[in-house]
Length: 165
Image (cartoon, rainbow, N blue to C red; front, side):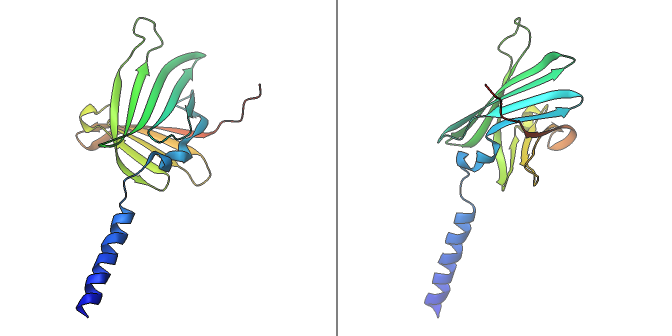
């Protein structure tokens, strides 16, 4: 009887460990491709490469009043400390072409949702990507005061139509 209890306990521990496996970049395949939408009267475009073993690349652009108002390069990479998203703002002005880069660590991941945080950064302190049931994508940034959300902006997007050459 005792042997059965030990075996059951080992099987339960293995099952829990399997459920808590470390996320891999292949878990983000749903993000690949190009997306378009409108947020706060601005046209938004975001494109992601397909997954590779250690990195995905993304590009974001916001256009308002026929002028690009925001550009970002995004690196999603699998590092020893976990999956990290690094976002680099590229200013439209050549006076500051480099912009700032900020890294956000993956803190939660489940079926089609990923939450990245950098609490000390605060604005934004959290980035969320969610694959919606209708096939659309919701990206959200949240500004924080400590761990409390003080404001947020949603970026709803649908798959971009294929471009003809």
